[in-house]
Length: 436
Image (cartoon, rainbow, N blue to C red; front, side, top):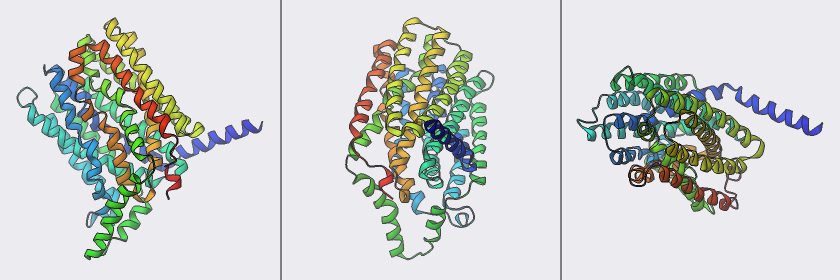
């Protein structure tokens, strides 16, 4: 009975955390964060494949997502600088977030107005600008989530942001592809830009973190010495504090490779479905709608595993599952356009991906020192994004050279180093619980 009481108490505590209004704000911000990603990634690759652009060129265009891997370079700006006038009313985090979101709306519309076959370079430039703004938005949203929640709430916060994030992916994935059957890509991207308003609403109703308000009020002095002190506190110390921890190099390499196999596979997913012969309706309904539903289940399970078992076991379970499910796509490539096998492969793969992503976000959140959340989380997620951006550039060339079956078997093998590194880094207790 005692064990049952403890289990019941644990579940009630877990549910009570999700009932907090801050979790709703985090969920809506997660939607705004996830929305732009596919517009410059798999939805863009689907658009380009339909325009007859080669696999090699589509794979190379993954490089326009480089800002997601480099965002740590300008992340200190959002910790160091407050927008005049607006910061006094909204706070440092929300004022920056609203500005970035308005610029993001304009950039998405601009990308949709480009013509791939007429000027691919212009389209790439527009996608790069959108990625820069999207990565900047992620910096602020991630910092906000970590600062607004207590340590015991971070697992639920990771689940909330992942649910919102996946809903954003659903809109810009299945939604965009379905709309493309009846609308031009310009209007598809314009509608996607309008959905950023959900994030604008979240930024408007969100409470500003106390730490951010304190930082702003403490930065009112304009003398040079004060600026140098703030520069040291917001630029030098976040990096030096994180990078001085024992074993941090192994941790950073782990972050790159934990989801690398999935990233390589994801870069070529839509061209794969297109070449295999699936219809746009099948792609939208199975890989996006059903896939996102499976991801949400995986996210919920991941949140439960983090709460009940802790982060490390959840990471291990997620890592093994996401490696194993890539084999299903090799079987699909061998079988041909079997919509039922597609559903099985997508469902299990997305479930595993959602579980692993929630565990990874909770892990990264736990690594951040409360005083340097924006910069440190940006640095950590930059390493995470490196696997799906710069390192994923050869994905199109590999698929074209070896064929789809060997390609997906290779993505399974690429997931193994991340699992090995996860087992290795367990020996290093470098979490934020010891770094207040």
